[in-house]
Amino acid sequence: MIYAGLLLGAVITLLPFGLGLLTSFTSAQQFVTESPLSLPRPPTLANYLGLADAGFGRAIAVTALMTAVILLGQLVFSVLAAYAFARLEFPGRDVLFWVYLATLMVPATVTVVPLYLIMAEAGLRNTFWALVLPFVFGSPYAIFLLREYFRGIPGDLINAARLDGANTLDIITHVVVPASRPILVTLAMITVVSQWNNFLWPLVISSGDTWRVLTVATAGLQTQYNAQWTLVMAATTVAIVPLIVVFATLSRHIVRSIVVTGIK
Image (tube, rainbow, N blue to C red; front, side, top):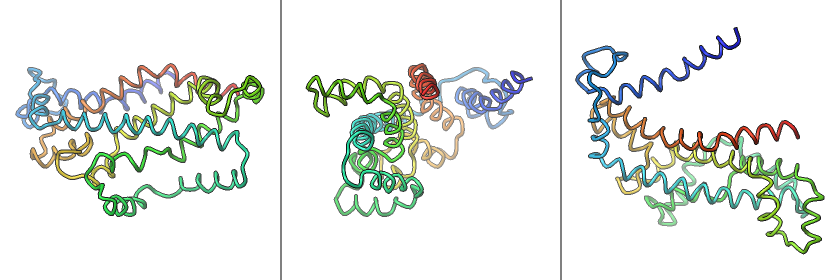
């Protein structure tokens, strides 16, 4: 009964994705004249070729570059901040941490207008840096996640490194980071998914085709091409495939981080 329930849940979850995949290989004429559940007859790549004609390749490149830069910044700055909050002693450390963590309770939409005004005053509106600067210097969730993990690393390991003459940066690079690989992979996966799917901020801060990201380009297809859902489903499929590849590559490390956390 348990497996039957899990199988039913899996079918319900995956069915929309399967239907979207079928629709992406269906001609527009068949889509409007037959049932959406009908198999493509014959399967066609016209929708994917239409994405190429619409300049979708540039949107993919911009999204990939934006995600890569934010991912690098998130990992570097979150690791440094989390280590400081977990292992370094300085006045007001805990108060500062909890005040910073409290910003998680503020909805992201509340900060859109102030961020927009800051970027506009700095002359960065509709630039690549406007896309990445609000997210590249770490986030409360990432720092909280890493801090809790760093606190579980044995103190004797860090003290032994100090006795060997390692400074703080050496300890982070050669002791903390290697010991935290599973949780760092998990954070990388969360960051990639959230930034790859980011829609509101890129929509607000950019205009035109130069710095248009994948989500904004997909939303634009519904008006630019008169809501041709076969084209939209092709764009959605293209957007999902990289995330599936990333998850399939990193899933072993993600499961390991869950297991290790449970043991601790």
